[in-house]
Image (cartoon, rainbow, N blue to C red; front, side, top):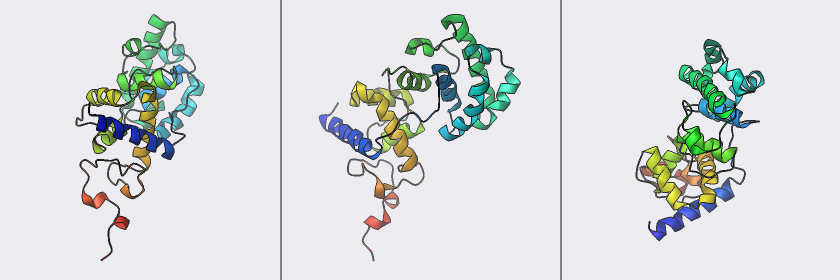
Length: 225
């Protein structure tokens, strides 16, 4: 991998760290089970919405046994506002049953075991491993990370698993967890999908701006006519 790209990646990581020093997992949780459920619900849904839903959900469902014995229709109603509620409710219930059958009701702390759970792919597993177990097994690649990786010229592909492997090769392992948090925060606040605010971007001097039209650049940066 070109050293110039590695140096630019390191500069981006540092600049984002200065801009978002408190970046971290925004999903509320008091246990590994809470985090697993919240992450399943976060697919195609905002963390803010998930946190509103789980506020009541976590008071009712405290153990894997509670989810495993839940009435599926009731659980669907409880998570309805997060979208894709039928599949999410089923995955939560079925994952809880597998936790009881194979892991004594506890959420496992390895990538291999997490990926066996219904509805759990690498993104969800990486969130749980990083934010709860403190393990760096990969990089969380959500829509923000996917978009920013291409815009910044850190990746040339749109395939999440390929993007993840590329980022793992570009950044130090100890930075994988923070990298995703910083990119996600930046994607929400500045480098938005439709209207990226390049004028106040803390990494604008390091960004390749792949796919961005000149109109996305700040009007303030243009000479007045």
